[in-house]
Length: 113
Length: 113
Image 1: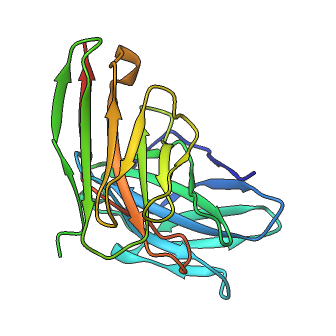
Image 2: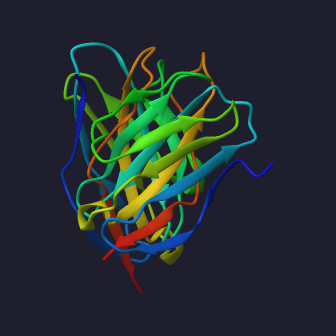
């Protein structure tokens, strides 16, 4: 079975500072990896995904993530955050061909002016 | 395209009351899902439907039933609501044959008193 651990429940940063949200996963088989974002009082929307190929994945709103198979990690980064990035971020994993996504516990990103 | 829609947006129930949460998607997706979101626990899968006419239990199915009414609609029923079912409920859908990217509805915030 797959599992996902988001290492920080809350991350406060100042506006225009860089940020990294950490995600580790556990799986004995190949997986797909996802980051979703949830803005206040909204549903989840896909930020980016890793399926195969290049380990550096670029997503929407200037976010990117790097797949590291040896470390079983998929950390999310942004070089300069904006107030509008305030949201909760979820890492998720899926076994290839599986019906189900397994989500991490979420990381709340707070941007201070 | 409306994507995934959910009704109602908010609901307050008394312990023991029943209700049905409605979900519909207009993307011609085969698979549909019901999750609940609780603070610090991420999203947990309640039930899913891989295709019209099939349903399967997820991680936390106790106290819930589902109906896949047709390809578009997937409802979640609470027969006798309990305070432990206070949560935000999300419906999602995905297209079969692709990697497991799921599209989410806006959620239903349920409070059971």
